[in-house]
Image (cartoon, rainbow, N blue to C red; front, side, top):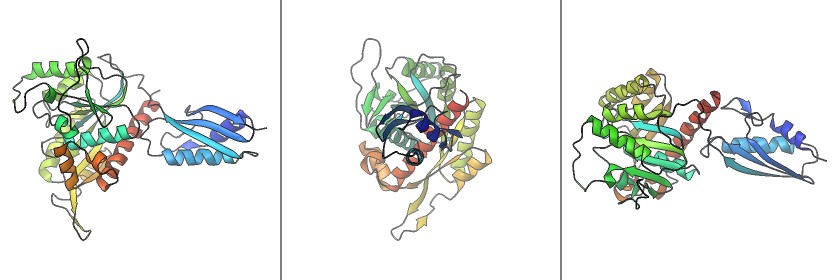
Length: 347
C-alpha cells in the first residue's frame, strides 16, 4: 500500500535549482491522490513561464517512480505567481509584478521588446497587462493591432485586449497625428490614472513601456507604484550604450531593481548563415557586466520583427518558432524566474 507520506518524502528530495529548496518545503506539491498503484499530484510552479518546467516535472516523476509498487504517475502542472508581501503599495492594484522597460534613447526597439515580452508571458499562461507610458510617442496600439478601447464601465476605463494581453495607451485617447504637449504635472496625473482608473483586474505581470530618456514619466512611476524591476534595452553601438547606461543608473537611484540588459538588433544573419554586426558587437553584455546586472541576451535584426510591428502581429504571434521568438520566450522566462526567486527569498 503506497502512502502519501512516502510520496512527500520522495518529492522532498527534489530540489528547485534556482530557489535552492525542495518542492515540498516550497509548497509546490498539491492534491496528492493514490489509487491502487497509481499516484497523481499537482506540481505548482511559481510562474507559468518557468524555464525549468520540464526538468522539475521529470525529476518529480523520477523520484515518485522510485517508490516500491508505483506503476503509474500522473502529474498536473499548474502555476501560481507569488505576490510580494513586503512591497508597499501606493495604489490599490491587484497586480503581482510591475516591470518597466526603458532605454536611454529612442529607436533601439524598446517598444518592440516590451510587446513581445508581454505576449511571450501571456502565451505561457500568465495574466499580463501592457501599459504604454511613452506618452509622446504611443506606438503600442499599432504594434498590437488595436484601434480603440472597449466602452467604459462607470468611471473606469476598460483596457483593450489582444493576444491575451490587456493594453492601455494614450494612443487610444487622442486623435491620430495629434501631438501631445504636456508638462510634468499633467504627465504625473495621466500616469496615475492609467494605473488607478483602468480595470486591469488580477494580473501576474504588468509590462510598462517607458519613453526614452530619464524624465518626468519615470519619476512619476516611481512615486505612485512599487516597481518589481526594470529592463534596459540597448543597441550595441556606443551612442546607444552611453544613453542606456544613464537609464540604468536612473533605475538604481530610484530604488528600482535592474532585472537585466537586452541587446536589440545585435546582428544580421546573412543568406550564407554568417552574421554581420552592423551596429557593433558585445556592447549590451559589456554594459550589463560593468554594472553588475544580468545580461538577458541578444535579439537579432529580423525583417519579420519590423513587419509585425507595422501590421499589428508581433513576431511571437506571426512566427512563434523563429529564433527571435525563441529568444523572447527564453528571456521572458528568465525575468519571471528572477521575480519569483526574489519574492520567495523575502517571504
